Structure formats: C-alpha cells, structure tokens
Image 1 (cartoon, rainbow, N blue to C red):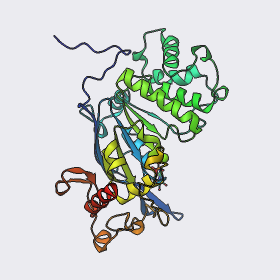
Image 2: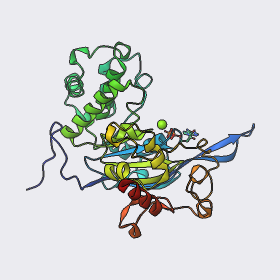
Image 3: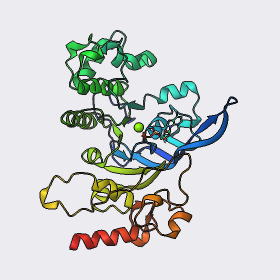
Image 4: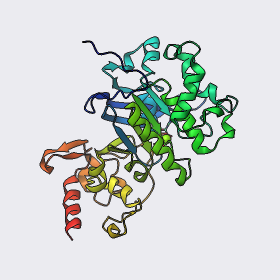
Length: 355
Ligand code: ADP
Ligand code: MG
C-alpha cells in the first residue's frame, strides 16, 4: 500500500536513523574591499570547510566563541548565502543547484529562528501577520480561508494565548517574542529548524522555558534542530550531538556524552571548563583552563591547526600541519576530533578520572 503523507499535526518522524541533511565541505569567504575602486584585498574566511550529517528528529548543537562562523553556517543551511564551495543535501536534494522556484519549495523543509526576538520581528506588523508571513509565499499549505485559524493553532502550540493574535511585538515579553519567532519557524511544518542562538538574548529564567517549548515541538512534530549557541552550557540539555567550532572550522563532533564527558580537543576542554558544574560532588574534577589571548582574525587564520596560537599543548607539528576532523581508529574509534594530540587528551582525561 502506498504511504499516505502524514497530516501536519501528527509526528513525521519515521526513523531516527534517516539522514535529513548532509553538509559537505561548506565554505563561505567574504571579500574584503578597499579603496575607491573597491578592490578585493583579502577574504574573511567565515566558514572554511564544515561537514556533518543531521538525522531526522535529532538535535545537533553547534557551539563556539563569537565570530567563529556559526551564523554564517546557519544562513548557508537556509541558502540565505551563496556558497563559496561545498554541497548541501536536504532530503536527497542538492540544494545549491536548485533554481528559484525549486528553492522556494525547498524552503518549506528548512526554516530558521533568529537570535534577537527584539529586532527579528517587524514592529509594525501584528502577530497574525508575522506568524502567517510564510503563508504569503506558500499559500498552498493552508486551506482557503483557514489562515487565521492556523495561526491561532500555531500560537497554542508554542504556548501563546490565541486571543492575542492582533497584538504587536512590543506588547510581548522577550520570551513570548521568541515563541512568536518559533511559531513562524514551524508554520510550514519544516523537517529542519535552524535555531541561531534562540535564547542568548533572554534572561536565564526564561531560557529554559523556550528550550522546553522547542523540545515539546520536536516530540510532537519530529523536527530536527541545528541549535546554535556560544557556550556549551545551554546546548547540553537539548542536544543529541554537539559540534564545536573554532575560526570557521569544526574541531570536534560527538554525542552529548562524548563532548561533555570525554572531550579530546583542547578547545572543547577549555570551553567546558567555563561551564559551571551543577553537581557539587563533581566540582574540581574538571580541568580548569583559562584561554590566553583573543580569537585570531578569520581574514588571516593561523597556519596548521588554527587553535595552536592559544593551545597549551601545541608542538611544532601544530603550526605546520592542519589536523583533520576524523574519528581515530588508534583511539578505539573515538569520535572525530581535529587535534594531533587527541590521544594525549584522552589519556590525561582517563588519568584524571581515576585519580
Ligand atoms: P558567529 O555567529 O559565530 O558569531 P558569524 O558567522 O556571524 O560568527 O561571523 C563569522 C565571521 O564572518 C566574522 O569574522 C564576521 O565578522 C564575518 N562576517 C559575517 N558576515 C559577514 C558579511 N556579510 N560580510 C563580511 N564578513 C562577514
Ligand atoms: Mg552568530
């Protein structure tokens, strides 16, 4: 019997092992222009060869300091930026080769929620207009005359009172505004929602509520998330896997357990040491690492391993050879880590645990 398409309100998650998105070697270089002739004098290497897969219904956390290319990655996944290089496949479709009208259809499958709930919503539009905006481009997803009802359903789904449908963004709190952004993000019933620091601008007490809404929606709709944040604390709870980025590269990629309990990249360990440990019995078991210096410019990244200028483990090889993000068979198939000395990190981690 042929499979009938699932209605919008039932979970679409068929199997968690199904790959919904594949990013291969994504590169984005922005030209740096100078002078009256606006000559290109260099490039900001915002994203410099990032690859990963996303499974249906999973959450991939992406973390890294400000300026490391997270938002650029998010926009590339939506094709809001044209790639300098790389391939993006969503549901088997090669996204960067699509023409305009095919791209329009593709946008239904992958949507984005932006960081700032204050500037990402048009202050002159009502909630009805904002959440219903995707229907202007895709009128086929709502029955004729059913638009208002659908917006109210979406409001209920994200925990907003449907009777507030005619209000303006300034009449809502920061957390509520982000719920409006999320409602707009799920309006087309996408398979993937890219969340670019969706809670970073919110008070800590409100952050958890918004994360809870996202988790509830994932259970109901089988959505996959790419959840971007600048620190490891925020993404732990929601992520199945986490990718750590540094200067346009992904330097470590693993399951939540691998990244938080058995990190092998020194940069990940440094980021982790900045995350407060809630369990007092575990305090002091984690490395205390304070990173020296600032992040180097992505217009002129360090040779070899880009982290070597700030790494306390760096040897000669680190400034000459670029380590690849690969799973190391010699480390018992440990998760991918782009460090020449990942092995030493594992050993020192083990020693620490048995002390
Ligand atoms: P993040 O989201 O991790 O803070 P971004 O992706 O916003 O990082 O930026 C990565 C780098 O690319 C930064 O150095 C930023 O200044 C640069 N960048 C981002 N967008 C542009 C653009 N449109 N033109 C030029 N440079 C850009
Ligand atoms: Mg950003």
